[in-house]
Length: 445
Ligand SMILES: [Zn+2]
Image 1 (spheres, rainbow, N blue to C red):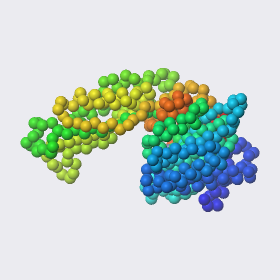
Image 2: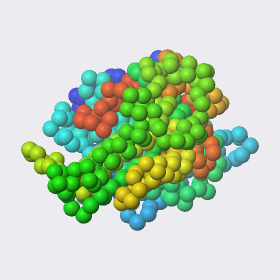
Image 3: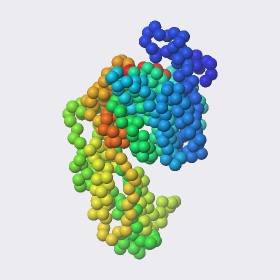
Image 4: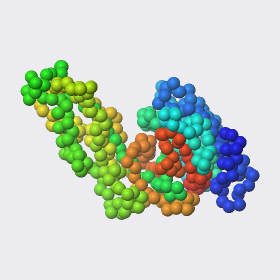
């Protein structure tokens, strides 16, 4: 970081209450930014096998930081997958002190930086400019990870850190690795997942629901080769037409309603109280609280230049369904399987592939941990905390809740314009420093 840029960043010291703009604080903030800069410089792109060494380097960097905090650190791996870092910060070993144990999740892997020509600053060089901290992973999720490490110094409770290295590639080993570490997590009273964003600047937000997902691939084959449509039209089934018919029978394109019998049977009803709560932070509810089905890709027959009058031999569709609370993804898989079997003409040769799914995540938004956290956030940011459900999925949240049955609170301090997964990713400077204060308060509660 150049001297000029660093100086400007240090002029900006909202981290402590008024009167604390002293040299000591400036030194502290400088050290935090230097740490952040080092972590961003490590190109821990989990999807790129050529940069696997960088993943290990990031894990090693974090491990050293945790050891400096006097944590006990364990790295869990399957084959050579990115390590899951589990560390315990034991502030009080004396049980009479009435300490809590808090679980804290963040991830250290990042998305690829391309298209690189659209970046205005080098993606892996932390750059502070115009009130924003730029660099790949600043917002998602290295900034939160740094904030957590800094805030830990002020914790009056025990903390168990869960730092994942394969969130951006679907957390495929998370469940297996977390189970290996189960004994280290058994005292945890509540989990905090720092991988979400705020509603807007100084308007904090807590997510208490996420959708689940199941994904499918269906292939239909009606003949060995493509056939002449003049000769065989109306005489043989057309697989592309069959798939189109099937998919339109599966979902009403006007209302979005999924027409698979029994599909909505388990859906958790939404109370008026919750609707009112959600309306406070959303313009539209539809996309987040209802299930949805989407065709992700479809291919069949001739798709090249000009025309070719054939009846294709095969057709393929990929589709996925987003699930809401109480829907069991295994049961939905069975319903889809049955629906396809019953709705394709007898004798049609088909193959259905199901890609491992996960259930939706939901916790009671009135649980005491969530309420306390909302109060802290409102106080630190001087704006009322909103409650929200997300249309997407965070695999770790659902797994932690299912395995440990403790409240899981999803928060974070990034803003809607922080360009997550895109060029010029950034973390708002003011939200970054205030985020540290918020986490300190959460750790001290
Ligand atoms: Zn993330």
